[in-house]
Image 1 (cartoon, rainbow, N blue to C red):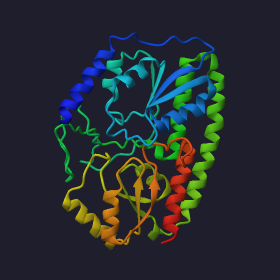
Image 2 (image 1 turned 45 degrees about the vertical axis):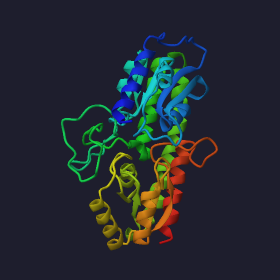
Image 3 (image 1 turned 90 degrees about the horizontal axis):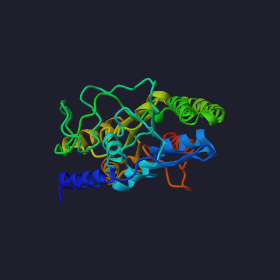
Length: 330
């Protein structure tokens, strides 16, 4: 069945949910019902809100927001929320449709508001592969896409949380938004945000120190998709993505051949798979170039509880340790 019909069916199911009662019964003293768009924002919100919030995620651990299709269950989930925490920067291309279907009338916090946005080279827009209709701008690159349901999102990289300093901005925005929705607990949100920001500030300084010790020739790696641009920019690395900004972007045979040549010529020794992506393409690249698979990186989603990256801090620490181990061993 084509994506067109699948998406039509999903839209019909979502539309039916609008007949349900909108909103939830919430009173002061109860945890504030919050929905985050994906697992990383869920954790940041928990860190700020503590036991005064009840936070769920639309896209859960190990989930890929690039290929996410909302269901009536997610619409009901959003209907019950007083607050929605979203990334913004066109990361959740499916979210406006979901909010409309759910009749969401609560407060929305755009976590990325106020960050210094990383701009992309011309023609490298963010393609989530969803049914938004064709964009006005075309895809200027050589990747093979399903243009029947793709959409060009513009020149900005939405993966801003990969720079810990940006995560601090996220936390401030979340604290401000929670305080607005729940003024009675505003002082507590501010206190917990301040404590967490101190932890993030120390983490950022540690990362800068550890990566600064790498020789210049050991700073290039290959990743699945272009999710680590902010990390690379902040900590002095160079990521060569096999795919573009979306996990649905498939490289053409010409792209792949050029990448094999680049990895060999530049002697890029480490290739990293991601928790949200099929590793087979990276494994093929490793076989053809002789480069080693350096490990798994967590890009757009946390690991499940009990995993190595079940919180944002754990995710960043795990990624850093994985990268440093591979790059130092070269």
